[in-house]
Image (cartoon, rainbow, N blue to C red; front, side):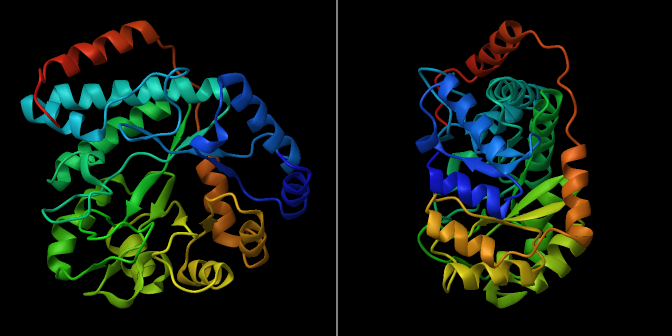
Length: 328
């Protein structure tokens, strides 16, 4: 951390931190960085987030951490036998939780409940667990259980659904023109059984049948009617990265729009200090129901259960071997 970063964190007191591959060199370095972040914030319990899904979205990887399968592997195993898929998903998440806990990371941005459709952008691709909402929700629940058993908090993403997006939101704004009935029966249906999760991350996606002018992240209509309403999610709602090109306007304007829409937290990911200052300057102090949601989210974290890592990895590998050479 630079002196300017320490000063910013101490003065502006972000609720938590999110780490990326650029922040990671080795286990000891990562543990030290996390301690520095918490020391600078003055909060030893400040949540530290990471995207550790497995497959191509894995911030911690070889040689210091093992590789994990992408979500589609669990879907393929589920098709062989639902018990195979759910067990593998739970084991993988439990192993990931063990990795994270040893570094000081406390929150994994997982599971996904996105339901892809033919023709959608590959940004979700084999990260998804399947194309049927109940199957997706079941696997997402198993992953949630694995994380929670390992003392790691889950973040449900990308609510209310990124599976139909025809663009990568890192680069441009996707517009989904499906009818609301279709969205309710498929995309939103995968999130409904997971509405009790403590945290969720929004999708920078326009659903034209509901709000043609704004992506879900900055749409009060989507937050109130769909995320809080139809889906029933009442936990801490954070935006996807405010610096993604899917959002319009300056960083300050995007930040204000995120909170005006009803999000509790604005997530900023690119590490640019001037942008972080803009986000902080235009973010309200956590208070009221947002503060209560934040407290409830952190209180949902439990102590890890006893765990035989070697046995769990062997069982996971045995299940994956059942797929043989089938491509995913």
